[in-house]
Length: 264
Length: 252
Image 1 (cartoon, rainbow over the protein chains, first blue to last red):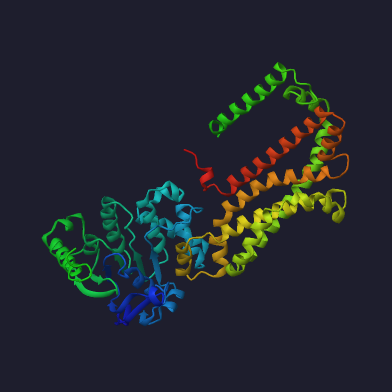
Image 2: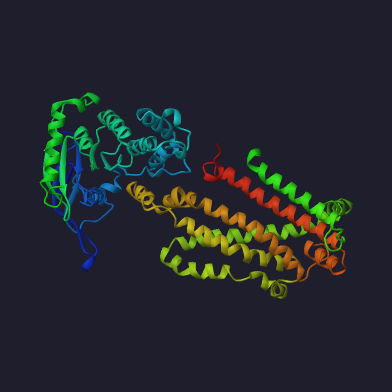
């Protein structure tokens, strides 16, 4: 670990343009960021600010129009082929023909992990997300929150060094979201994964992150970075501390400063 | 399962009773419309022959079904390899499924002979297109995010096919298979109307009908119905075994 002191993810002057002519949209403009190994980084911004596009560029699901991204000293393409990414989308994207256990085993299956290891590793992950007793259920038998926990277990089962989460709790109700935030914290300390987390919820970003990057829309750029110095482990009590509210205010101000959403 | 089919069973029983009552009350002559009781009596008095001709025709339906559905699935798999090609082929496939292929039955006799070959050919053509279209739609139906998930695992083409496209297309395939059981029975029986051996359902129905032996014709239609239903529900059972996860299987 001590050998590689450089950032695990580095973006320099990343821009993304969709369409052409009158349809041309500048989704991202001159985005630069450095993420250190083991950080939990949230990208927050209003809808359509290009935060998901940024995550998708890092994960090699979209090509940037300009600029470069380096992941563990490699191109994102190489990092993807090296299976460095675990991804959680806004929807669980579980395969409905597979049981919960078989869904969690999917990456192991695809990646050629010996079959004997699948069971124990899936079991460990399901234990971690508290769904061990649902291993033989099908996805449709689970609630939305439970399905998203399965998606998290599936993303982490092959020990990826980077976890990309694209508004994973965006479709859930507030109470479920808070509970899953706390659970995600508990899971994350047991991994060494660096997390890039896209959200539009300020409390969520503050609660989870080591740093929050605030984005402005059209063109998307990072306006401000708020370092979250709340002590870990963070629990439900963390949400009641004055420092938590101070940091929420800081992030909110960062979002307000933006002329595009100003006065809103 | 029992509860699910109870309303249908009640409707069926009521319909049969109404038919029986209608024939009795209005004194319908048997050659116009025999009562269900008479049809069943006729079947019981001639069971060995009816079963033999039924199975003869059913073998044609089954062979054509296997060939048509098998070729449809394979062709869809090939077409799905290239979505561009699939987009070109699909409209033509949809158009050909509206061609009344049964109209080709007399020509099929010219091409494949009066025996089972021509009937199997018609059934194959009738079942091929729906299976091809449905399976192709299924193979192309996977969501962009399911594909991105596989992409993030750096999955190869074969893994993409076996772990995602194929299982995702199973419900579409089975829908086509279920429709095809029906088409196969129609194709086999109606093809025989245009000519075939005496020991086939279609010829039995049409030759008895021609001499107003409608009770005999009806008893053969009863056999065709029973075989068609049996065929359909066999596919339904296979579907449930293959896709225990599917919507159609969910109970309670």
